[in-house]
Image (cartoon, rainbow, N blue to C red; front, side, top):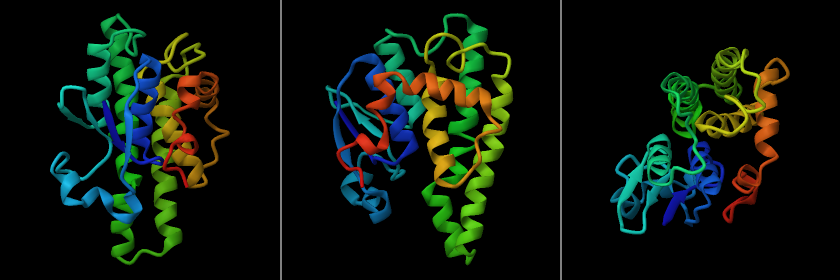
Length: 210
């Protein structure tokens, strides 16, 4: 398999964790987002959105969108599971993951921040926007799992929720968000980071890290 990504991409980070947890390997194909390499015609030919990640499986099938890729990995390589068996618990995990992957991450990613700069916002307001978006999403997620005993977001093993949480917390730190008010999220993050699958997927450990 080939994973097209970027070391600092949160969405790519999620998929790297999933691959590691499933014990799967993929060739890392970097696309430098800040240099615009994701808009190269050769890459747009496989991912017309010009986003990362894109996963090419060993048969040449092309998958885009991190959560769709993770769901595919879950269905084709079900062990260890990243979603609970109980339908209600599965829905809760998915809701938490979507709150970060769909409602938090997209509004503070590189594309949106670049557009804010194009519209003339000063850099401190651009960074402030990103910090606000992170704080808003993480605040809701902290409440969503407040009653979960853990140590992970939803129980004693990592789920799709943790795959979304750890990269988002890394983003929040980059934008200067004070995370001390999110104790339940930090507890889950600490449990996750003790696992090699999470540690090895970290941005600073990737071949294209800067």
